[in-house]
Image 1 (cartoon, one colour):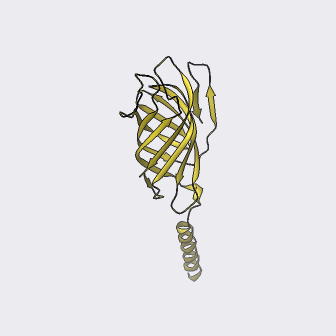
Image 2: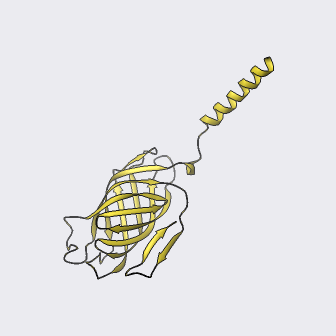
Image 3: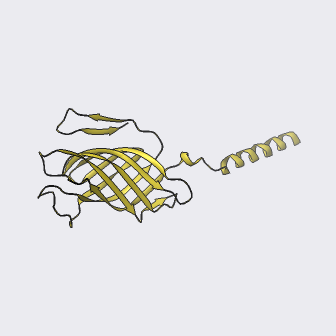
Length: 174
């Protein structure tokens, strides 16, 4: 009976220590929400059929990220297409308050105001032209877009591919 009690106690201690041990930094995910601004290259995006490939940068200051507590998300990459119909790929960084920033590869497709993100960043957000943007999509060369919603950051890996057999390159992340 004493052997059984010792075995049970040892098993409980091992289980408790294993449960309480911190997870490695790469094991978790962050979910971040907020409103940010994407700046589309110097030429911006225009109306179809004027398809372009340009760079973009994105910043979300004042984000709410759980569980890391981060308040800053940034991203850079390329976008191909026109206002209302585009795709792209890039790298997003979540600035963790207690760790080094971590990069996350992603791809996205945008139709209308719906932007769907795949890869190491996953989610569906709203992407609308900044009403203060000059010139606008209607005038050609829209540069600023407001991105609103939430995404999940993970470390599942991302192999980006580009299909060039369409009006503009379609980027995917698998």
